[in-house]
Length: 346
Image 1 (cartoon, rainbow, N blue to C red):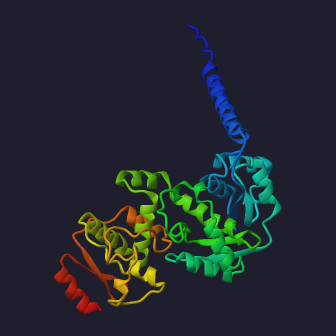
Image 2 (tube, helix red, strand yellow):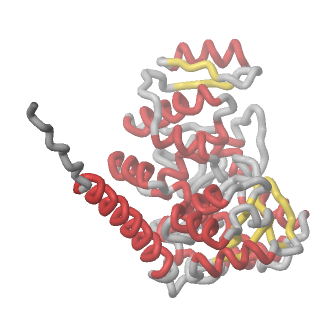
C-alpha cells in the first residue's frame, strides 16, 4: 500500500495579502496625515469668512462644504480627523468665522466652541437690485444705507478676479454679483465684510464647468452676469428662461436692439407692467430700445437658474416675446406675429 505524503499548505499568499493590506492602510494613513499636516490652504489668506453649519449636518457634510468653499484642502481628511478626535457628532450648528489660513484642527476647535451670538438671518431673493439689497440689509440692523453705499463706493473690487473688465461709469460695480440666497449675517460685521459674503457666495458659482462653458462661448463673467440679470427680470416661469435667453442671443447676433423692458425698468427704478413711449425714449446707455448690444452693467442680481439660462440659451427661431397674464410668454418669429400677440395679451 502506497503511503500518501501530506501536502504542506503554503502561507505565502496569505502573507502577501496581509502585507498588501498593511501597505494600503499605511499609505492611506500617510495620505491623510499629509493632507492634515501640510498646513492651511493659504497662510496669507485675506481675512476670515463666515461659515454656516446647519442643524443636523454631519462631519462629512461640514467637510464637503468647507472644501467647496476653499477653506480646507480635503473633506475626507477633515472627517477622518473628526472621527479620530471623537467629535463627529459634536459640531454645533450656527455661524462661524473661519479662514483658509486656519488648519483643520483649528477649524474644528472653532466649531466645537460654538457659534457667534449675534446673528441675523436675511433672505435676498433673485432679481433684487443693489438698492433693494441695501434697503433690506439696513432694515435688518446690519448698518445704515449711507454706510453700505460708502462701502460699495470704496470696495476693493480688485480682490475678486471676476470683477475685472467692468466698464467705468457703472453706478454700482457690484450690481449683479451680490448673489441671492439666505444668509446668516453677524450683526457686528462691517458693511464691507457683509458685502464680501455675497461675493464669496458668487465665487462658488464659478465652477470648473461654468468656466469651461464661458471659455467655450467666448464670454466674460461680467457679460454672463449682464445677460443673466436681464433674463432674471424678464422671465417668470422656469420653462421660459432658456427660450428668452435664446431670443436675446439671436437678436444680438442679428445686430438688433434687445428692446428689453427690464433694462428700462432699471433706469426708472420701478417695475411698470407696460412701458410708455416716454419711458422707452429715456436717454441712457441702459435703454436697449435706443442702443444695440448689452447695457453697460447688470440690471439686477440674478440667481442660479437665470445664470444657467444665459450660459445655455435655447436654440430658437423666435425673435420676439410678450408677457401673458399667467406669467408665461408668447413667442413670435416675425414682427407681425408679435403684434398679434401684443394685441391678444396686453
